[in-house]
Length: 186
Ligand code: HEM
Ligand code: HEM
Image (cartoon, rainbow, N blue to C red; front, top):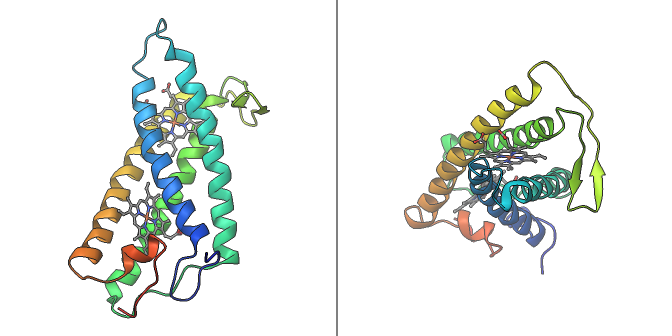
């Protein structure tokens, strides 16, 4: 078991966090789109948003750990075969994914606490409201939340396509090292 990243490999903590977040994001996207279509008499009308918010809070905690972990254990060096364009564009894409994710988490928090209510984490404890009643807070944050969710999902699909291109066309170890395998020199 390799916990920390090395200069050539992603450690298992980074790999686990990467895939956990990816699954949570796609799940939250589907859950979000579905829950806003529910009617008041649906059994999931209250349950689905509670679940969406609780998972969202967990995601925020995981993302905070991810950022701290990135400082403790920096990602491996880019493969020697990468072009200048690949190096720059992948950095920009990773940065954009981080920004979109934190933007979604923040706007989700602002929608949920706009009326001054707290967010319950699976009923275990409450996260209080900080900023409330800022004009059209819930509406504005709602629009930002929806747009950022689409941006994140579309960008992450381009990001996934790039990973698949590296795997199947360039035949390098970009994808396999994010799956926790050893990196070869290519
Ligand atoms: C990656 C994480 C997340 C994703 C992908 C996501 C995605 C979505 C989507 C697609 C919708 C439907 C929006 C619409 O059609 O109007 C939605 C709604 C919502 N989300 Fe999230 N969300 C995330 C995190 C969060 C968090 C952390 C919270 C709060 C703590 C939250 C609170 C809400 C609320 C309250 C709504 C309902 C908005 C409304 O009624 O218009 N979300 N989310
Ligand atoms: C919402 C979904 C996703 C997000 C937010 C995301 C985010 C990221 C981020 C931020 C990195 C940079 C390393 C880090 O800071 O941890 C990364 C690396 C990577 N991701 Fe994703 N990712 C997502 C989905 C996917 C999918 C679906 C695939 C493949 C099918 C994939 C493949 C990779 C690979 C191969 C790397 C390593 C790239 C390198 O070594 O430069 N990701 N991802």
